Length: 154
Image (cartoon, rainbow, N blue to C red; front, top):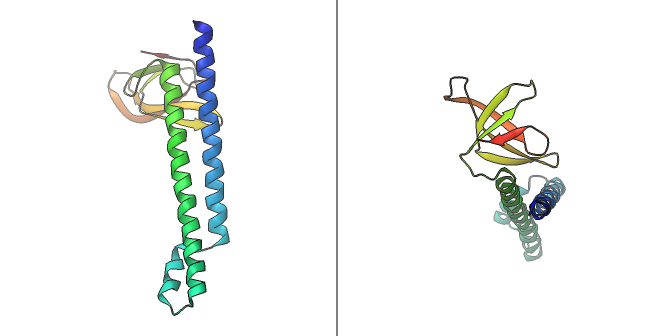
């Protein structure tokens, strides 16, 4: 049973890492394209000018490439976020809104409300609002790296 859980977590983490790499690749393509067609947001202005039909088709294709790249970036980000969140749910055994106790980098015991996840350097990190020593919810944010920090679900 434990072996199956470990295998499942490793598979989920691999999906999250692969999705992160796909997102970063899509983001790189968008940035490269924006550099190729600097000020591409202004391409539509050329269509208002008296340009020939061939130039108009070319400009529309450039605009279409930009829009397709941005759509791929958005879709890959959604996919990455889905896998990162799925991995965090399984690893924690919890859900958004749960309280996570952890030891911070200074060795202090802390607690956060599980509000979000993020991929940081190949590791899944859970983020949320920290509790004050009084037990009240604070305003400062905290984060827990699920692969390296000491943590437990409350």
